[in-house]
View 1 (cartoon, rainbow, N blue to C red):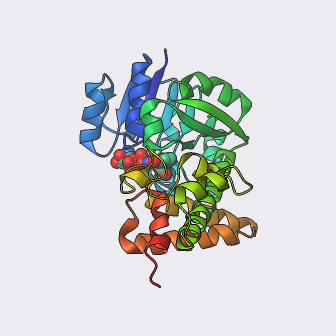
View 2: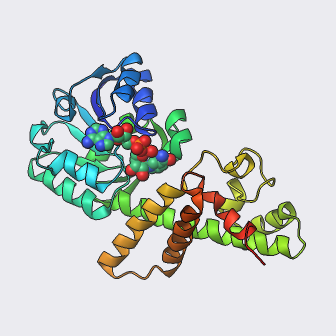
Length: 297
Ligand code: NAD
């Protein structure tokens, strides 16, 4: 069993840490919200006073923070912890951040002889709780080999996307495509319904035809068509519109840096921003269906 330092015990990090504890690892934990640390302590983790203490005498260090700014300041800011980390410690950042930030932090780690992986996840809070996350990893083969048994305690699929930052690139490409598929599916379903079709019948036709995609297969946005999805629960739970907008922002940033054209992703981002403006920021991203449902004509 490993000694692990863990920083960021929020919606995702909390249950991920909990799964590591259940697997028998020793955890030192920190979050700026004391209640989250207390909760983890009740499950057997050792609370410490700050991020710097979480890296002392551990085999692996994991962070799960909101965004690039938090990750950069944790590792390379004025009080950055890289300087405190023993080069024998494997560092894994699971936050979804800009590929450029992931590269910057990983290069700073490499200068100190530290192996660092970017390992953003897919699968949401349900996946974090159930230990079924997908990890999309950027970094060295050797680093991933060492990380695999630890990641396997929190997820069921582990992909190696490439070198440092590649995990983040793959994650934002996937989420940009997902946003396009979801908005397109919602648009097509509404067109069919407005022209007299039953949304369940249309969904089944498109699912089995050339328009078939993951939204129709597993996450239908039209209320009443599929059981067990956010559309059947007033779009509660699932993957928040706010988070989709964050990931689309990262995709746009990456596109600007390389000159890539992303017209569909850009349109999807604008639609989601308008949707958030209508009060849907904390709803599941499939609620974009409402934008088409509630049109005025
Ligand atoms: P969250 O806001 O619930 O958790 C982040 C935690 O980090 C919070 O508890 C916060 O207090 C803590 N934190 C912030 N700065 C800190 C610091 N300097 N030191 C210690 N703790 C600090 O967010 P989340 O939903 O757990 O998401 C975490 C990451 O995972 C994000 O990058 C998000 O985009 C990504 N993600 C989230 C989901 C999801 O469905 N929630 C799905 C996939 C990926």
